[in-house]
Image 1 (cartoon, rainbow, N blue to C red):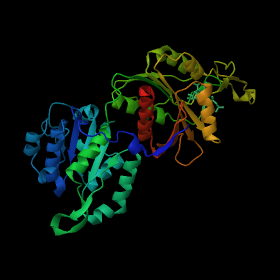
Image 2: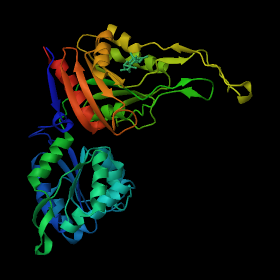
Image 3: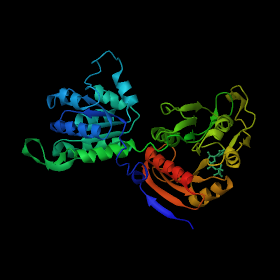
Image 4: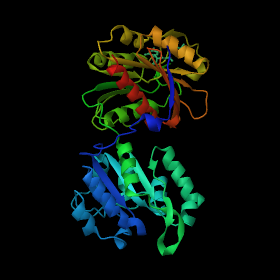
Length: 416
Ligand code: CTP
């Protein structure tokens, strides 16, 4: 019988990471200049106690509130304060690349605004821009500033980009005022950091992900393609890599792949097929998030068709559906996942593809709905299992949706 469960992606991905999630993880702790900077000392100690390797980065204003020596004594690494502190010419890139998570506590209105605008004003904001790790921002400021639409709009933008914002609490503020804007408590922040880092539960897995729409040549300069941006496939690859998987990403999208992954850049359905079939047998999971063309122009000339030749008649031929091949040759234990981007009869169409292509899971999305599917940073999907289970993931950032899909893949593999 079909089971149906609805959950938010926040519950689905990394929820309940609990104790031990931070052990051995590299945390950059950004501290900006507010009265709450002194509370970051306690946060630093708690992160170190949880087993994290903490590198504090202080802004110049933060130093007016709390001494770098205190942090250096407590943290795993000396405090970093500027892009020009030491011999390393690119400290922000190194910090950003090595981090498993970046936490900014307290985050002032200035740091939030610079980060939202993509402005690298100091080592902290440069590190925020140079990282692909999850980011947790913990604002603290006076109530009037906290409630200002400029601050709220910047935070909305950051949330939309997948940043976790830990809202401040109500309470006593600097100067004796009382209201919203007090930095969240250290336990709340540590829990948010644990959730953002998520478990490394895919260590030992090799996962192949395809991404983007294929481009089929009409002639030497023109192509037929579709509106897939590759964002969902790349988010899946990023999330799988962050959870410890060995990732192969076969993509048409001009987006960066996760650090350490094998990234294979392709254009056409035929190139994608060759790249995937050469690598799929060795993988524990194959996720076909790419929008592969169903038809391609037959015999495209390898020269440019000139305008004065008149409108060309483009004859199409079907491409080969290699997801069917993957279903037929699936090694024991491999989890095979397809995507179904639909505009009508979403679930029925997806279920029929699941059966026809002998998949373990299919991810169905209604691409005609607002904020869903092609080109958006967000998605809303239903993950359907071959056993009839259906799990709805409400509209969330594509990285969070990826977490839910990877959870379903793990559950499928460990099912008896
Ligand atoms: N797919 C594939 N090779 C193709 C076409 C599709 O591997 N030539 C894969 C896609 O990557 C996706 C799944 O099959 O994971 C479903 O693709 P979709 O285009 O939605 O389904 P089709 O079977 O092509 O059916 P239709 O176009 O009628 O919706």
